[in-house]
Amino acid sequence: MNSDEFLIDYYDTIQDRRVVSNVAPGYLRKLLPPGPPHEGEKWEDIQKDIESKIMPGLTHWQSPNFMAFFPASATYPSMLGELYSAAFTAPAFNWLCSPAVTELETTVLDWMARLMNLPACFLSDGEGGGVIQGSASEAIVTVMVAARERYLDMACEGRQGEEREMKKADVRGRMVALGSEQSHSSTAKAAIIAGVRYMSIPCRMDDDLALTGAGLQKVLDECKQQGLIPFYLTTTLGTTATCATDRFEEIKEVAKDWPDMWIHVDAAYAGGALVCEEYQHLTEHLEAFDSFDMNMHKWLLTNFDASCLYIKRRRNLTDALSITPSYLRNDFSDSGLVTDYRDWQIPLGRRFRSLKIWFVLRTYGVEGLKAHIRNHICLGERFHSWVLGRQDLFRVVNPPAFALTVLTVVPRAGGKMEVDAGGASRPGVSDGLAKDGVPKTEDQGLVAANRITKEVYELINSRGEIFLTSGVVNSVYTIRIVSANPKADEQHLRKAFDILVATAEEVLDRLGEGGRTLTNDVGGH
Ligand code: PLP
Image (cartoon, rainbow, N blue to C red; front, side, top):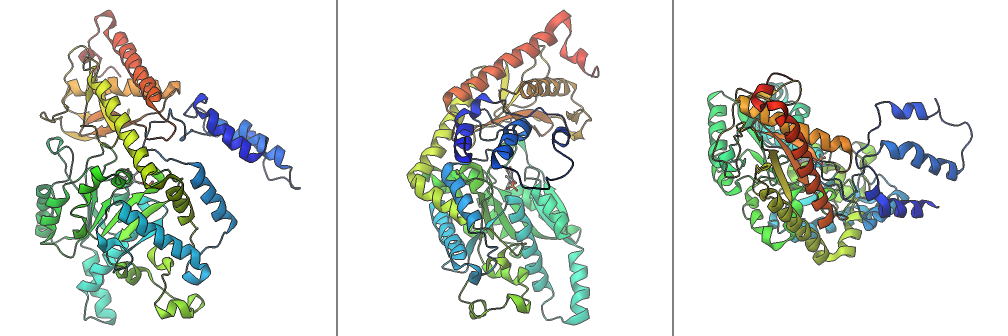
C-alpha cells in the first residue's frame, strides 16, 4: 500500500479503532532503537512502523467517536493544502520572500471576515486586517503584547530616554490583563508571557456563565481603587466549558469609559458558526472591540493550524512588533505598499497556511461550510433532547450551545444537585480541586454527585469506545459532549448517548447496592 492509499484506508476505517490511546507512558522509547540508522532505510520499512509503533500511541481525533475537547477537523482539501505548502516551503516572513504567500493570506482572510459578517473595520482595505496565527493562544499573546505597548506608548508620551524608561517601569508594574472566570486559560498564560498581572472576573450561573457589563464594571472599579491599570480584556464567543457567549453590548457600554483598554474577542471554536446567517447577530457590537480570533482548525474543516486573527488597527501590531535589522530591509518593504506579516506575529518565519484555507473554501463553497455547521448544530440539539428525556439519570448544565452538551449524572439516593438548566440554584463555594480532581465544596451532596459524574466519565473513557472530556463549572463536575466531526452522524451520537445511559445506570446500580447511600460514601474515597 502506498502512502496515499494508507491514509485513505486510515480514514475509511478510523471508526473501528479504539478512539483514545491506552499505551503506558514511555511505551515508544522501548519500541525504537537508541539512535537513528546509519544508512537510509526503505520507505516500506518506515511506513510499516507507522502501524506497529505510532498507531497504538495515537488518539484518533478524526474518529467520529471522538467527542472530547473541541473538534480539530481535517479534510482532504486541507491536507492537500498542507502538502503543497510543504512542497513550496519558504519561511515567508516578508512580502518579497514569496508574494503569493502574503497576498493569498490577505485575500482569504478578507473572504472569511465577510463570510462571518465581521465589521468592516477588520478588513484589510481600511486600517485593519487579518493574519493567520498558529493558535488562539498565540493570537492572545500577540494582541496582549500589542495592547501593552499601545498603552505604554500613550502613558509615556512626551518622555524620552531614562525618564521614559522609569515611567514605563512604574506603569508596567500596575498593568493588569482581564478575562472572565470562563475565559480560556490562554489569557492567564499570555499575561505570564507578557509580564503583567492577571485578574479574572466572576461569572454567574444565573447569567448562563457569560461575562456581563455589571461584572466587568465591578472589577474595573476595584482596579481603579487599587491603582491598577486594566489595559486588556478577553471576551469570549463560545467558552470552553459551556460555550457561553459574553454580553458584548453591555461590555461595549462599560468600555466606553475605558477607551484605552484593548478588548479581544476569543471565538476560537464557536466563531465557526458565524458563517451561518442565524448566528451573525453575534457580531453586531464587535466594531467596538480591537481584535477577534477564530480557529478554522476547530470547526471549519481545515487541519491544524489555521487561527484567523483580525485586528482593527494593524498599526497597533506593527508598532509593537516591528524591528527591522538591515538584512530584512528591501525596497518593497520600505515602500510601505506591501504587508510584511513578520510584524504581525511573534516568530519571524511563517508557513503557507492560507493555501489550505483557500482549498477548503473552494472545495466546500460557502454553502458547504454552512451545511456542515448546521448539520452539527442540529445533531447537538438532538443529543441534548435525548439527555433531557432521561432526567432520572442526567441534568443538563447549560442550554444547547454550538453543538455542545454539558451534563451531570443525577444521584439516585437523593443527593443534592445544585445545578439546573434554568440556573436558579447556587452551587456551593469552591476553593479549587481536591486531589482526586473533584471540586472542593462545603456541600456534601454536591461532593457525592460530583464523584458519581466523575466515575461515569472515567469509566467511559477507560473503555475507549468514545472519548469525552470533563469540566468543572462553579464547583460542579461535568461531562462535555461535542461532536462536530465531519465523519460523525446521528448513529455516532446515538451510540454515545446509549453508552452514557448504560454507564450511568451501571454506576448508580452499583452505588445503590447493600443499602449504601451516596452521602455515606462521602469521605470514603
Ligand atoms: N479559546 C477557547 C475558547 C478555546 O476553547 C480554546 C481551546 O479549545 C482556546 C482558546 C485555545 O485554542 P488553541 O489551541 O488554538 O490555542
